[in-house]
Image (cartoon, rainbow, N blue to C red; front, side, top):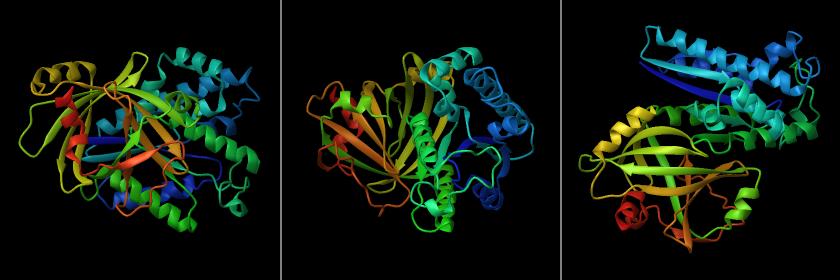
Length: 362
């Protein structure tokens, strides 16, 4: 059995309800048992529990995050007992959505209340798909009439959309679906992005890599849609033609762990399979580390620019350059590089700039 837990999030009037229906149809046909965790905010507000009825906004957020986490535990428990090989657990918003509606002090109190840290909450989901509000680029379709819990003006909807993107920035698999083309086009892109992540029909990733001048990291840290993540990556003994690695990913002492197996198909297209590890499994896998390579340590800056999600890897052994990566759903997709970065050249096919090679250079 494989249970994959994803989040469908987005600003007000983004098309989540329609998207959920399409996900049910599309992935049931692909052999998945599709389960949906309903939107917690709508349930609570419709039942009379709201930021304006609770003692404070912070108290309301404690209720919402705790109920969200408990619902996800129940759905996961139920899924584990089902007679199914592939289960797609779809969360109509996730725990980090709440961060967009709190200040830093309230968010810290919520984390303490539920006994979790931000890395655990954010990276407990396998992937996050953000549907951009209609208030950005499709204003004539923005309405509050189809959701009793929606109260935002167009300007407020844009602000909420931005805050939600900022809340999820830093997740290893975060995709933004904008309003380009028709609404039908938007929904097709959502289904295509989910299918690509799930590896349907095969788990390919399309990645392009660029060498850039050493970035202004102080500026990056100040950007609302940029999040720093610490990564330690260790390569394991593997068969010829394959790359096997384990990774510790997080910040401030809070980490999650992954094992990844990759096989190159061509320059930017690779077969990629990833699974989450416990800390104990991660430490055990380190015993099989490739003695010819040392552990790569780097700071990764996850940056949202427009609707594209960039990853900037800053290594301690370089003072004049860094690596910029972007995952694409289509190899011909146009890349719009952030203006604050100075592009040197593309190195997608240059083996000298692969992490496995850099591990030999340290």
